Length: 438
Ligand SMILES: Cc1ncc(COP(=O)(O)O)c(C=O)c1O
Image (tube, rainbow, N blue to C red; front, top):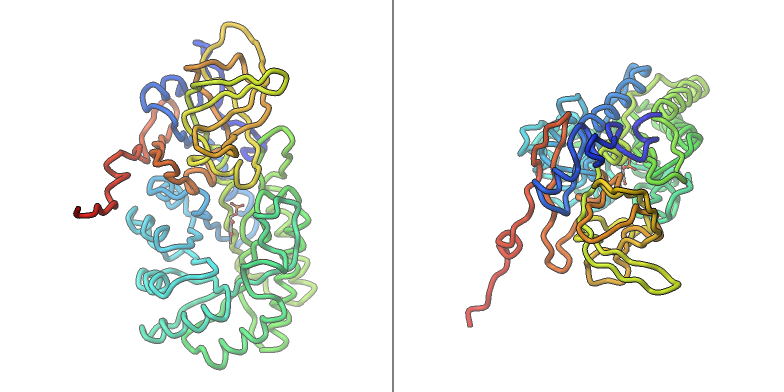
């Protein structure tokens, strides 16, 4: 099984003390040393998935893999992907700044997003972003004006809404026609016309699409490549230019629970490559440079969250709640998307006494439930709970709701652990507060 097909990091085992360990780091020791809640990222698992991506797409001679920073952006994580040769899909000045702060150049990166501000556009151009994925007419005009004011010809892709639905949660579908992202297929001619005739500071080199997230099917990628290449062909016929780049986005699913059954990255790569080969033959096109921009599947399985169990509440005949020292502010996905997670008690238990409980967070919302109805081994106050698959879209979506401090993050690697995000402090929490004078 490949990384994204495992619920747990690939280095997870029970050690001789009876505690869970990942990458030779005892999770109870990590909880004691760094306190909880704690994000833990296993470098071995993360790098294995990154290498699988590289290997799977090495069959296509012109493939560029960008890490979708939105899944997990920190300086250290960016350094790891940069060293592995990945570029970055960024969506904000903050993500760009994080890369620059880690001494990472933007010459392999793409700037996405449906409402980039003038400041963000300028910042990206000034710092040498490779290309923009332009989302709409308003951005085309603004970007051309800014590029012109800098005497620059800026490389762009056009983001399209390919009209492909995938079976995933509604809130994280972005490829269907009714989406806030991208140009409808019917508007593409107008956009190309404007670029060729009016927006002389833009150089259109490709098309970009992203059909959703947590995808379990291969066929949608086959179809997506077909739709994008058919459009390349139509643009070639109508405007006599052959776009040389396509970006098919991210979206490969991972295994959060036993119900999830994602394909491997090798299956996805083979599907995409065979679709490109088929459609390029069919439409008589040169094989384009391929970009993909996975996020979740690169980092999710490498991450776990550690919590300490505190109070509990039993409602006779209904359910038992156990409460942890974190919840919806460090992992908003269950309350936003009804996302499901698997968890285990990390500390040794003398006997196996499974008990069905609901794991509640400590935030002031009834909806702050991390996991409903999970069997845990006699969960009690003081136990360490390990929630799997929190590497993606947890830290990056975290908040200070209830003015609770954001957790630290440690990177572990074969017995070694290093802080890569410090735990927020109370001083940091109030540092932007401006008090009234009286
Ligand atoms: C444009 C775009 N690219 C890539 C991604 C990454 O998707 P995933 O994390 O599912 O791989 C997203 C996620 O929303 C996205 O919107």
